[in-house]
Amino acid sequence: MGTPLDSFKLETIIWSADVSWAILKQVVDNVLLPRGTVFKLDRLFFEENDKEIITYCQGAGYHVFVDAKIIEIPDKVIKIANTYLKYKPWMLNVMAGACSTGLLEKKNENDQIDALKRFADACAEVGTKSCAVTVLTSKKPCVIREEFKRGQSEQVLTYVEMMHQAGLTDIVCSPQEAADIRNIAKYKELSINTPGVRMPGSSKDDQSRTATPLNALRNGADRLVIGRDMIRGDGDILDNIEKNYHDIFMHILPFYTGQLSV
Image 1 (tube, one colour):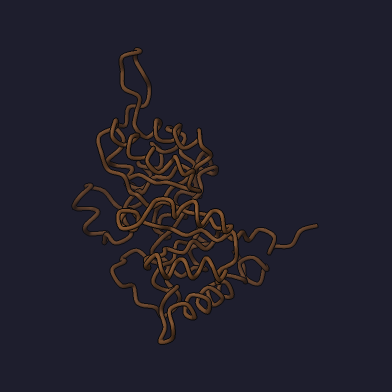
Image 2: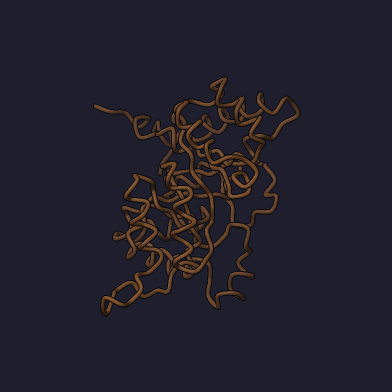
C-alpha cells in the first residue's frame, strides 16, 4: 500500500525562475533542484535568450512551464503559441480573458473556432499541458470588482467554465480561489497552479491575494508557483535556492504525511 507522501510529485513546487540564464544554467548543470522539478520561464526570459533553453533543461531532466501569457487576436494566439510548441514545453499558458469570445460552438463551417479551444488542441497535439491565467494574483479585490463588476471568485469561475468547455488541462489562479474551484465537481480534472504563494512571515511584495504553501494545498491547489521565496536570503543565490527549496518542502510535508487535518 502507498503512503500519503506518495501523492507528492516533484512538479508540486514550480520554481518561477526570474533569474539570468547564467544562474539557471548553474542550477541545471549542478542539479541543485531535484530532476523533475518545473521551471517557470516568462516571455521576457525568452525574448532575452534562445528558446532552445527549453530543450537544454528538458535534456537535463527538468520540465519547462512557458509563462507566455499570450494576449492576441485568435489567429495570432495560435501562431505565437506554435513558436513555443515546436520545443514541446511541459506547459504553455495564455490569458483567458483575451483569448476567448465565450462562443465555443460552431454554428456552421465558416464560424471561427474559439481561440481557447484551438490553443488547447494545439498543445494536446505535442503533449504540452494547456493553461490559461484567470485573474492576476497581483490584483486587489477592490480593483477586480471595479474592472469586472463582480468579485474575484465569480470572475475566476467564469473563466474556469470557458476553460472547461475549451478542453484546457490547467488553470492559474490565486490560492484564495482554488477552494471555490475544487468545490465544483465538473472541474475536478483541471489542475490548479497557484502563484502568490509565500512562506509564513515573507513579504507579499507586489502580490495581493496570497497564501502559505501549506494553505494553498489545503485549498485544493495541485501546484505551487514560487519565485521570490526561492531566492530570498543573505547568502549566495545558488545556496539560497537550494536551502529555500528544502525549507518549502519541509513546510508542506505535513500535508502529505497526514500530520494535519485536511
